Image (cartoon, rainbow, N blue to C red; front, top):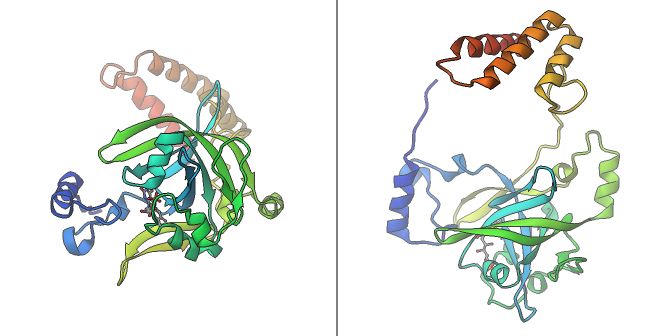
Length: 292
Ligand SMILES: Cc1cc2nc3c(=O)[nH]c(=O)nc-3n(C[C@H](O)[C@H](O)[C@H](O)COP(=O)(O)O)c2cc1C
């Protein structure tokens, strides 16, 4: 197995010195440095972020550097995080009013996505220029977009500056989903939701002239194996997992007891040197289970 290693700190420091560009323009290529940042950033489903300034002017920015996540109990809030260059009008509005709507767009809006990404004067609405339809929101001031698959109404709960960009963290407070997509999902095996909604994934900025290139998702479903892990829940606890393996017949009740005991001994002292024997035995049992 051979690997190519890239000192990305110096590659991007050099880029910064030479180009001093907007970060969407200074994308390193194989021709210039032998590296492509696409080995860091995988294809990402893109979305529009609609914001409003204090005066009520609407702005809409296509964004791809972010993702949804769920907070753990006690609140289990659905959250979102993305980064915007500090020069973006959308970023200025987020600092002013702290609200946005994140709207996932389907393949049909490929042309509109380019229009929304154009450098329109601040205060002129990309939604109007692109001919999209505002969808009133329930809990935030900015609107959603009726042609989009789903609209996530979001409020800023935190932000952090990283160089000339700001990473925002939002709580999703309301979601609207086009009814036709919901009805189709309910009768689609494995209910893939946005996975089967024909979203566009940013893959590269290449070509003459340079353009952002999208890919679409292969909608075939590939379930992960059900002969490993907890037999009742998705992940479950370690004890539930071992119970399940015993029910499957991969381990006897005695071996299960031994594994649980080793786990207690390991948790009491997770020092790889001092408790090396316990670690090795526990690892061996788990290897036997997952490779059985
Ligand atoms: C598909 C797509 C994804 C983008 N992702 C981001 C992003 O994640 N962060 C960012 O700052 N700019 C991103 N951009 C660039 C901005 O959308 C673009 O510069 C836009 O003109 C900024 O608009 P605004 O100044 O009205 O906010 C993206 C553009 C496109 C087309």
